[in-house]
View (tube, rainbow, N blue to C red):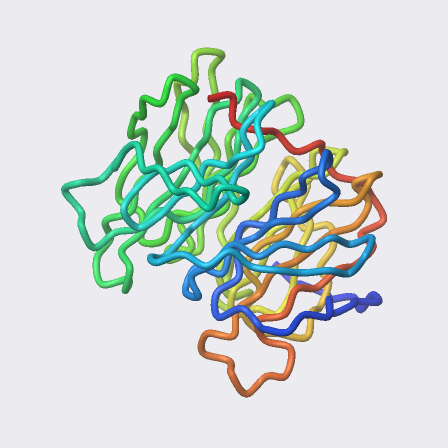
Length: 292
């Protein structure tokens, strides 16, 4: 599949640091802030686009994602050790469960919330030394269930426009899978949605726009691409860093696309690990919060 990369104006958000492994951006409309993680700092980063202010909350272990809780001021986070609640105002961290006690060398990696307020979270081996990743569902009652196994790097969940398809990636296999998602949270009919050719790099984090198309970050490919619901490549936008990790729509009208990247393995690149922002020409979907 041929890929023609277009060049659009891309802004590098001014910050004092670059991310070793930036991931998981999420927009908080009620706060007017963008959050994301640097998995290996490890830290939660935040940006107030209106003022340009940025900041960090530092952690003692790798953090794969941060997701707001509905109607609350704290967050649920995915750590190497499992699930926890994090309150930035109090500075408190309250672990409540480890979905993979049998894999002490795994960590949680990338997550999103479905139409029922449930979190779908992947995992991976910390050093990629084993194909031990899985796909988990965390329910509002704080129980969790494993739905799929055998991932090298479980990554980038997102959903179809109607919420009835879950897209999930094994970056190591260069493959994006699709599952039917039932009202009760059950998955069925796993199939290959898209497979990246070697020259595209690896599919990483992704998000869905208001037309139901998927925007996917290319680790090792220096771009983000937009794919139709049938997997057709529609657009590909070049970015000034090789390891592009994830993306999220943000702003009052959800018409700005923020893109994370990693300095890991690319320290010689001036923009590696930067947070980018661009106008994608279409808005995204409103972000969801965890119902628990």
